[in-house]
Length: 135
Image (cartoon, rainbow, N blue to C red; front, side):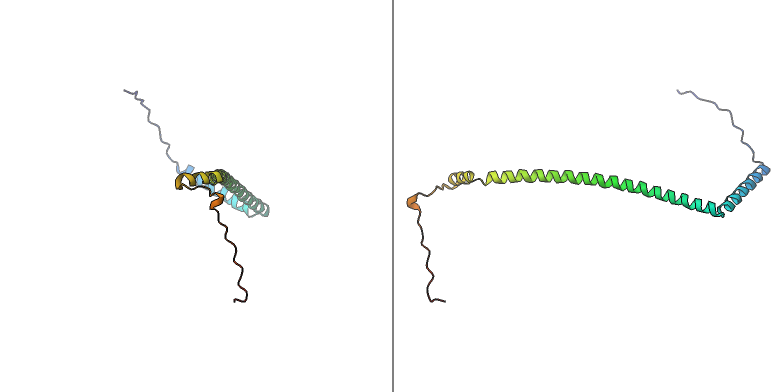
């Protein structure tokens, strides 16, 4: 079994009406001073510059984040392009190997019992001269 800790009851402070009123009065006085200071031209310009600085820094953060995302995307696309180029060169090698003259001749003789014709089997057909006057 676990140990049980017995805590002494804490005393709750009673709110004193005068303390609450004093706090409210102090808060109102401070807020009036802040609003009065904001109406001065120098403070207004400084506040506007601070807001502009915060907006600009947020823009830099967003821009850097988008730059990183785009760079990662570019890297993935370049890797994919390299894979496609590698596959294309392998396909070209395979095509050249499959269409080599010797291989085609070998397959023709094995599968279809074809042979290279001899000189006695070759017949030359003369070209026909165009008919004169025929249109």
